[in-house]
Amino acid sequence: METIKGFIYLFLIILGTIFFAPSFGWGYSFVGSFLFVIVGIPIIQTLIESPDVKLPNIKFPSGENLEKDFWEGTLFQDYDYKELKGEFFIEYKDPNNLETKRDFSMNTFYYADDQKDYFIQGRCHLRKQNRTFRVSRIQKIINKETGEFAKNKDCEKFLNDIYQNSPFFIYEKVFNDHSSDINCLMYVARLDGRFTKKEKEAIVNYLEEINPPTFTEEIKDLMFKYLGQWEDVSQTKLKKEIQKVKKSGRNINILCDTVNNIVKTTKTKNPVAVAGSEMVVKLLKK
Figure 1 (cartoon, rainbow, N blue to C red):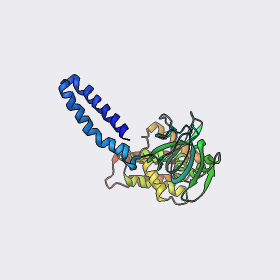
Figure 2: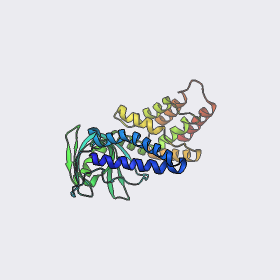
Figure 3: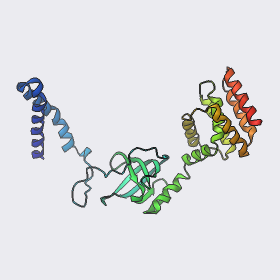
Figure 4: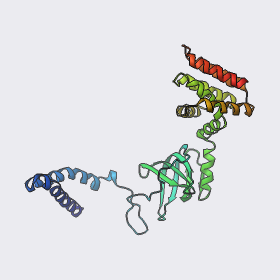
């Protein structure tokens, strides 16, 4: 250990000399070297001697210490990310056939078309950092909340089953099934240039009324979150969406009542919002 520190101190002295000599002359370069060593000593002590920052003594088949996980992430692309939260334990084999066991707090689940595989992302408690794992390399996964588990090829179905019973799946299905309704309501809600909490609640209450049973608070929170990210709706798009709603066979009266409820959420009536809501109701009932 002392030999390693000696080499590092020598490196810092050389580095300080090279850094300061061109600008301040050789005399000041020795002062720079001294400063580099003074600053570097506590860092070296922490990196080399502190047990808190040492990684577990996991080894590659070659016997070299594992300093870094093999990169399992993919370059950023617009994948269809799914929120899937939970506490899991996984046994994982990377491309080097290194097997590790990890506690894992999952946040995201998605399929990467270019990789032809599912991936999970979240907090790895072994590395104390965020990590991405390829599902096809998971040897075993355990849901720590329920005790349910899967092995090898069954891990993909296991995760998909969890996703299809998750709040995110329910939110996503409702929004996909009723995107035309939401577009009609969003058009009215943003006519006055605002989008308030009460207007969001009116839209969520409408979706809940036509999609029993009652939504959980977690599902509602997701709906509030993604309604806030909803794109603006033009008049041209609005008319197309109204036609889709009318062809769907849904109860137009409930939708019209919600349009009127959105306008009523403000004490001061906005003439543009009132006229717009009347137009939407008229087109829906035409």
